[in-house]
Amino acid sequence: MPTFLDIPFAAPDGEVLKADLYLPDSVDAPPPVILFLHGGGWRFGDRKLAPDLQRYFASQGFAMASIDYRLSTVAPFPAAVEDVKTGIRWLRSVADQYGVDASQLGIWGSSAGAHLGALAALSGSERFAGDAYAEYSSDVQALVDGYGPTDFLRQDEFRDPDGKPSDDPESIQLPAGKRSTDPDSLESLFIGAPILEVPDQVAQANPISHIRPQNTPFLILHGLSDTAVPWQQSEMLYNALAQAGCNAELVLIEGLGHGFFNRNDLDERGPFHLQYRNTQKPDEVLHQRGCIFPMVAEFFSKTLTAKARLI
Image 1 (cartoon, one colour):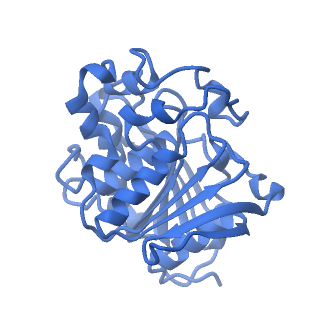
Image 2 (tube, rainbow, N blue to C red):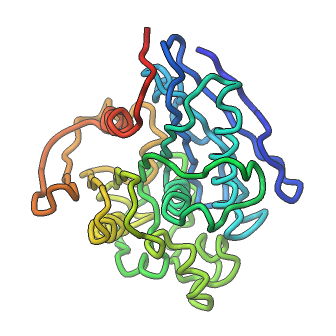
Image 3 (cartoon, helix red, strand yellow):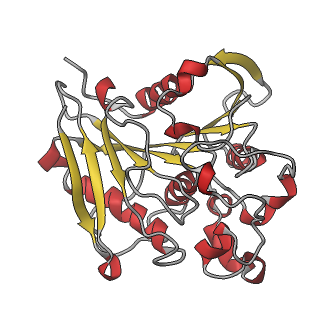
């Protein structure tokens, strides 16, 4: 399977950002691209904090990419979302070089990466644009949001004080008992100021503030046992997308906490009990059982116009 690692794609303010690419072995046309955005509270992690991108989903005919973005230790908001949009445009600039179809590009985000992906998808091409590869579009054709924050100022009202964090590679590094409104919370460090003191700036960092009628379909997944980002954050995003007439699916998963996309063996513990909602049928809540990674693959298969087929 063709793999290209440690590719420098940008250096904002001298901070070198790198990308990894994983391409399918045999396709009969350029494959669509899925860009994975890692979690880590905007504070830690890099492009390697990801599931096995060869298995999920280069082996199924997608070109997979994972990129760095500036952490809050380096630069506050909006640096990280600018880097995400730069990464999208870079992928389009090298599409011919790597033989991929970056006109069909989806984002798959985990936690903070889901927040950045949603913000990039919803904010339009003019906001948080950055400077590099300006001749290319930063639009995306599909987005999978895994347990991302939606409204920083409303996270604490849903927190379970008795909840215990899961032991995945993301959650284990999140400070226990921390509230989003604390002056040194991950959200405040990301913004660059205590979030209660800069509500206008926080609003600009909230994906929910940028929702408008648009064509990017969303698949939103959240574990009902998440103690890092309450599941109500995903429900709020879904409801706001539905109200704007957007195409969105919400899947709430019993028994899962935070960071489950980092577990390559996730579905070996399934199938899971799911609560499923779709804006196309707003009055229905389906209760069913299913596995997580196949659901993500199916979503991208139906939303990215794949000209490529495995041969």
